[in-house]
Image 1 (cartoon, rainbow, N blue to C red):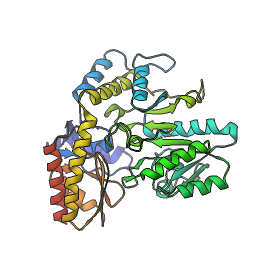
Image 2 (image 1 turned 90 degrees about the vertical axis):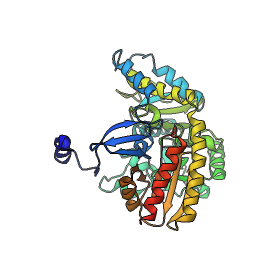
Image 3 (image 1 turned 45 degrees about the vertical axis):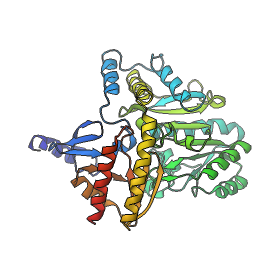
Image 4 (image 1 turned 120 degrees about the vertical axis):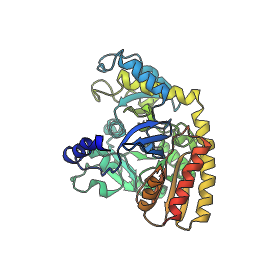
Length: 395
């Protein structure tokens, strides 16, 4: 650790204190990371569902290395060879439409909000319904869309035009639409991530899709955490057999390289016309090369099938843990997007798990966020859950 003392000093003196990290990670490979003392951890965080096919995936690393020597960046005033092909791949795996590339999930959600307002303003509609306990980003507009007021504290005044209603409550949406003729869109996550890994109820989401269609309201889907195979489907909404009007993705799209995207259906694909939206770094040749390599790995390595199989195994083992430990209140989620809700704060479990060689984080205060790599193997799943068992036993 002595050789990294200058790093820890610089962290304290020069990094804004928006996080409180206690561990320095210096290397990663597959399902594992190593700290500055060369201690090895099984990683069930994946950078919060970013490295979904593991750390330093060879196909992604090779694509990035190759592209770095060829062309890193050009403005979107020019075509780059990877961006249109990546857009085509994304629509093939979601729904027919057009794509705008950004750098992050918050930027993608900002763009989706702008698209909804651009579409709705000629009709006199520019307000958006979002869900309580949702999370859509840290920019001013996405903070306003986010359904937890604690994130907005200190950043007032909030951007206007957002209404928060209870998740899984269609009547609340219907009541608001009936009393407000300015509603342009409903925006939600198919599975709330930061809110505690809360899936939408199937009937609710199907009825909401029908209601939005009948009332000419856009259905906006934030798939930043639930997308890119995390639920066993390429996108979380596919577990419900519905299609949103607009969808955002980011996090795992580049498997660690920053890139986000908005996908709008065919009828909305030209709403953001020339000059109305832009991004200097969105969809650079390097970012798109990383994302294309990631997409190819999903197909070539049967990532979705493995996620479904390992998700079923994990849920089975976690339900056994629930029967063993009374502190566990509920196990919920799809695929390898699972939440372990505890009856008390999860901080001690996380601390003990780290000491035992497992990295895991919370979604809220009481929910362990179970996010291993989607290409994880059975032995690693069993080992990780065994460590969680040990940590719970030590409470």
